Every structure is written in structure tokens, then in C-alpha cells.
Length: 277
Image (cartoon, rainbow, N blue to C red; front, side, top):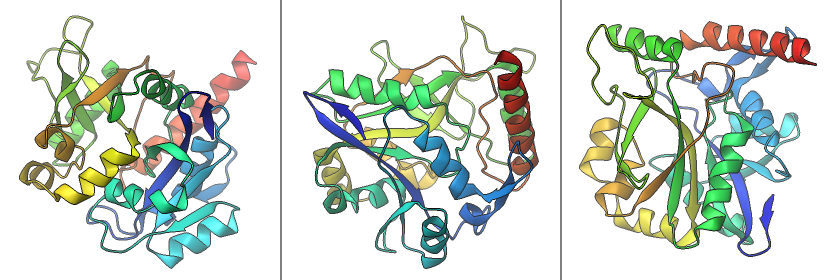
């Protein structure tokens, strides 16, 4: 766990479901790593979560025994949750009784195996320093290559990622699967006109999760397919912790077409790490 003397601990939980309209059975899809070995996507994500400093308690939350069995086979911890959970945040909320000593619950997306450990640590640290905050998430400035990936996916009718815009205090104004803000077709993101790529990371207080479930779904979260919009619609501020992008492009496994892209990034990242060593 990530521990703080003043605020206790933060449990990292990876919500995983078998059914997916865009990519059925996605958590069990085999992804080839830099060593040439294939592992299920959920295992890659679990191992990525373990890279967070002092993260000695990582769980997978699922309602599917096929996923649970695979996680147990590679030595991971599983929390079984109801199949009535509408999204990952509700699935995290269903884990409250299973992690009674955690003051913060961290939602680590199961399709975001390229998540940099420093992003998780920065978000948790921010929440520990701001005891009055209910929820936080993370964003990185889009690199030109990542931005082109988003544009190409949008042109092809695919969802390539989520963007976020914030107010001057760093609180989220809106999240969308479209690219925000709008840039002219010949423009690229820059320091003057940044495009913030939202990473699939959240840190919640226990009370915020309880209130989230009690309030029920809202129209915008269902229209966009973005669970975090329920917080904004209900008037719960979500702070966006902006971190430096890693040395690799942040691509999630949203579609089957993303698999070879992610595999190539894993290989390049390993090669660069060997050179730096």
C-alpha cells in the first residue's frame, strides 16, 4: 500500500469486466511483451500497478470467474463484486468492505498497461496533501504522435482516448471522448494550446464513493460513456493532477486495433531502458 502517517493508506484496485461492446473478453486478450512472451492484458496491467512505489496491495475487482481464475493463476489478489455494477467506479465502491483500512481507493484501469507509476504516486500524494478533496484524476499533455493517434481514431469512428479541460484551479470542467479543446485541422497541441489526455486513474475518498453509488447514474455519463461525469454533474469537484508525459506514447487498449500499437511501444520502451542502463 501507499502509506501516509496522516491519512492512512491507499488501495490500488483494477476493475475488470468480461463483456465489452468494442472489445469482448478484453482483459483476457493476450498481449506480447518486450520479451516476446504473451500475457493476458489484465496481467500486464496488474504488473504495471505493482510498479507504483510501495504498492504492495493491488487487487483486481471483477464479477467474472474467468477473469478471477486467470488473476489467481498469476498470483494476483481478487475481490469479487456484483454483476450489477454499472461501471468501474461502482465496482471500486463495491470493494469498500474488502479493504476497510484504506482511506483512499485508487482506480487503475485494466486497459491502461502503459500507465507510468509516477502518475499514480503524484495523484495519491496530492490527495493525501488535500484532505478536503473528494476525488482526483490525472492528465498528461498530448505529444504530437499521441494527438495524431486520437485524430486518426476519431476519423475512423473509433474511440482513441479521453480528453479533459480544467479551470484555473485545476478542477475538471468536462471530460469527453472527443478531442477537447477544438484545434484547427492544421494545428498541433503546444504549450499555448494544450490538449490534455486523461489517464484512466482516479483516487476517491470512501464517502465520495458511497455518495456516487447512492446518487445513481446521470444523463451525461451515459451519453459520453464516461463514469467520472457523474461527479461533475452532482457538483463534486474532481481535481486533475497534471504530470509530465512518460517517454512513451500513452495508448490504451480500447480497440483490437490498439494491440499491435501497444506491443510496439512495449518493445521500444524496453530497448530504450536497456540503452539508458
